[in-house]
Structure formats: C-alpha cells, structure tokens
Amino acid sequence: MFTRSAAVLLVGLLGSVAAAQLHATEITLEEWTFNVDGTAYDSFTNALGDVPGLDSSGFDDVTGLGSLVFKTSTAGSHTFIAFLDQDIDYALNGYDNENGAVTGTLPAGESFEIDEPGFRSVDPGDIYDNVFAGALDNTNALDTTSYPNGEDVSMALGFDFTLLPAEMATIGLTVSETAPAGGFYLTQVDKDSGGAIYYSGNIAIAATPPAGVPLPGTLLLMGAGLAGIGAGRRVK
Image 1 (tube, rainbow, N blue to C red):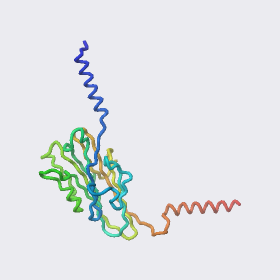
Image 2: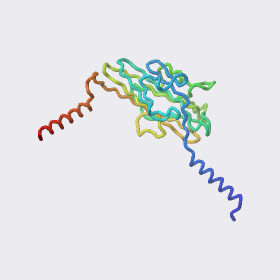
Image 3: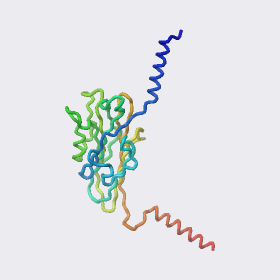
Image 4: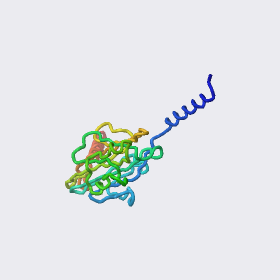
C-alpha cells in the first residue's frame, strides 16, 4: 500500500535529485594580480585595462573564466606572472574545501604555484608574496595533512623570457571548466561539489617586420591580386 509518508519521502527524493541536476558550478573571481617586469597590478587598486600589454576582451572578470593575451615587443629580459584567486561554489559550501593539482611537464622558462592566497592568520600561503617578488616557487604548497578537508586555493603561472630587437612575445592564458587536451596545466577542484577549473598558458616568440613592411599574408594577397590583373590583361 502506497502511504502518505511514502509519497512524501518520494517527493523529497525526487526534489533532491532535481536540485542536484539543476545545480550549475558557480565560479567567482575574488582577486587577481599581474607582475609585469617587476611592477605589480592588482584588482584592489587597478582595472584589467591598466595592465600594459594585456588584452582581456575574452576574459570574464566576474567568474575569472576565459582567455587573456599579453604581448610585448620591447627587447631585453622580461617577467610576466598572472595570479588568480577564484572560489568554486562558495555559496554552496564555502571556500576552504578545495584542492589543487598539477598536470604535465613544466616547460622551460615557465613557473607556477598553487597555494593558500595568504589570508589565513596561521601558516598563511606565500604565493601572493612570491607574485609580488616576481618569482614563483614551482610547488603545489597545499597542506593536505594539516587541512585534509581542503583549503582556500589560488593559482599562478609565470614566464621568464628574453626578446631580441624586432621580436614579439605573445602569452596566452586560459581558465576553463574543461581540461586541456594535453600539455602543462593547473587544476582547482571543489572537493564537495566536484566543480573544477583548469588554468593553462603558453608563450610564442616571433619576429616582427620593420615598420612599413607588409606581413607575409599581405604579400600573398598582393601577389594573388597582381596575378589576377595580369591574367585579365592577357585575355583582352
């Protein structure tokens, strides 16, 4: 016999299942800092547009998801570090139940760090200090022994490189809820909800043509156009 109490229990179970199915991972960007050649720009005193050479048009400064592109063509040695402090499902279960992981082999000239962002009164993480100092320590410093239920997590990627005259460096950063297909990347995961974000980056250095010299693609288009004009003249 199907009793009223059984019906109530069934409705409750269905409601729980529906709520779980409807839950979407909530990602919140709490703060960011960029170190560009020894000068730090942070979200407490700056806007993303204040960071020289940074294109943030593909980046959501509310969630911290999307892409960032940094470019410089100044000859010499350079340091670029991007620090992001994001929370996953904070409203659902707080911020100190997260963990981090490192995947892949760190490329030459790049650096990383995963750590508590420095807010803890006892044994705070040093990632924020390292970002300002311009030197990440290449460690996942989360303490799973002292904090087995997780911590407040932040992540940073860094690049040290040298440009010759007429060279340009392009650094691409991506923060996504989808893991990269390969390469080196960092992961931040909420241990309760299972929500996760993946932080990856790459650098490309290429020659820049002197002012007034067309790019190779432009030359190809010009050649095709001239060939067309020549062909048109021959059929007259």
